[in-house]
Image (tube, rainbow, N blue to C red):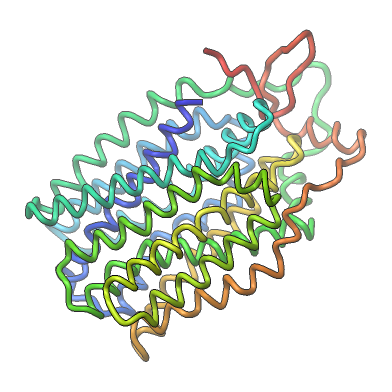
Length: 415
C-alpha cells in the first residue's frame, strides 16, 4: 500500500513542479491569458488522446509495467519542458504534450491498481490515495515557491524533478500487486475492447464521468489559474501567488485525507453533493472577494470541495472488479475533457472580462454536479454469467486467500 502512495505522490509532484513555475513561463514566452489557456490545452490534449485505449492496455500488461514505463516518459516530458524554457519555446510545448500523454496513461494505471487495493482491504481508500497525489502537488508547489524566492533557474528546478520522478517511480511500482496472468482454464469469449465499448453505453458510468469532468475543471482551474489570478488582481509577487496555489493544494490534500470518513458518514452521493457545494462557495468567494485574504479563504474552501470528485467517481466506477479497468478508462476519459475544455475556456473568457469573473464558470459546474451526484450510489451486481464472461475478457491478478481465487484486478498485497 505504501508503494501506491509513493506513485500517486510522484505524479502530483511532476504536475505541480512545472505549474509552480508557470508565472515565469508566461513571462518568458510573453503570453496573454488566452495563450496560457492554449499552452495548458497541450497537456490536456495529450492525455485525452491515450485515454480511450489506456484501460485496455493496462488490463493486458498490468499497472506495474504500465506505471514503470510511463514514469520514464513523464520524466522525459519534464526534461523537454526544462530544455525548452532555456533554449527553444516550441520544445517546451512539445514537452507539455508528451507530459500530458504519459500522465493520462499513468492516471488509469494507478487508479486501477488503487481500486484493487481498496477492494482487497474492504475500505474506502481511494480518496486517501489521491491525498498522496495532492501531497505531491503541495510539495511541488511549496518547492516552486521556494525556488522562485531563491531565484533558482526554472530549467534546473524542473530538470532535477524530472530525474527524480523517472527514477523513483519504477522502483516503487515493483511493490505493486502481482502481474496479470491470463486464465489457462479456457480462452476468453469476450474481447477487452468489447468490455470497454459496453462501459461507454452504461448510463451510470457516463454520468459519473460527467461528475468527474466538472470536478476536473474545478481542480484544474484552481491548479492552473489561482496563482496568476492573485498576481494579476492584487499585483502581488510571484512568491505570494505561488503560495496561494500551495494553499489550494493543501486544502485538496486535507479533503482527500478526510475523504474516507466523509464518505463513510454521508455516503458517496452525499459526499459529492457536499463537496460540490463547498467548491461552488469557495470559487464565488475567491472570484468576488475584496482582497488577498478573502482570495486565500476562497481558495481553501474551493480546494477542500474539489478534493473528492475524481477519487469518489473512480471508486464508484470500480464497484464491479471484472469491469473496473473499462469503466475507470471511460470515467477518466470523460473527466479529462474537463482538463481539455477548462483551461482554454477560462483563458478565452478572461481575455474578455478578467481571470476572476471567468472562474465563475467553475461555480456553475459545481452547482450542476449536485443534481448528478445520485449516480454514485453503489451499483447492483451484474448477473453471474455476464460477470464471468466479462471477467474472462480482462486479465486477472493471481492470488489465493483461503484456497479461493481473488477477484480480477486484485492480488496478493505482499508484505
